[in-house]
Image 1 (cartoon, helix red, strand yellow):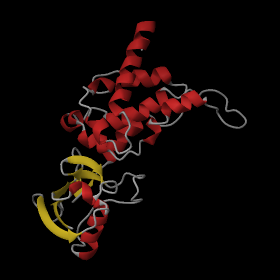
Image 2 (cartoon, rainbow, N blue to C red; image 1 turned 120 degrees about the horizontal axis):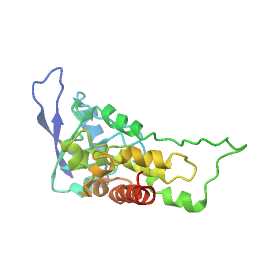
Image 3 (cartoon, helix red, strand yellow; image 1 turned 90 degrees about the horizontal axis):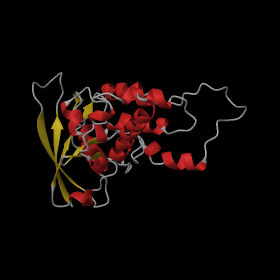
Image 4 (cartoon, rainbow, N blue to C red; image 1 turned 180 degrees about the vertical axis):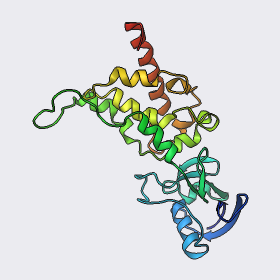
Length: 238
């Protein structure tokens, strides 16, 4: 089938303003949007810039806005857009470096704030720190997060308030708050108990709708809020 693409273009070194460029290619229904982008770049316009790596929904590097919704270009198939013009735009909320490539450093700064690693003050065991099957199961879905930033681009709060820590860092915080091997439970909750922390989320659910790994992001954020409240109720403060 013939597919029409309208792609956001902007090179800060060459353009005063962003613009959209049209392309048309032949594609099979089972082709991925990423396949189409590659064909456009290799056969029609080598100046087009976008990120990609694994191409199989694992690295998350090809996150972008596809017909108004944040998604991975390697997960979306041509047949999902049959009869439509496909509009490709960079992830919202981030500075465009070139075309569909955005500066994700501010995003990773927020992820680093939640200390996305296990912290333990106990003496390391001889072999490894064990985790119960029940605790592992509790975190199974949270650890699917690939830091693609689709949820951040889709979040209406992030788009208006750059101070809000955002859904992906909160998912990573959830993963360590509830990990029985981590010793910073109270510290992690205290760190998120502020207006632009967990309380910045007002349940738009856009993060959950666009997550390519089907993580119940909003549910996890609300669980963190409940845990903060529960802990306050017991001790008078987090």
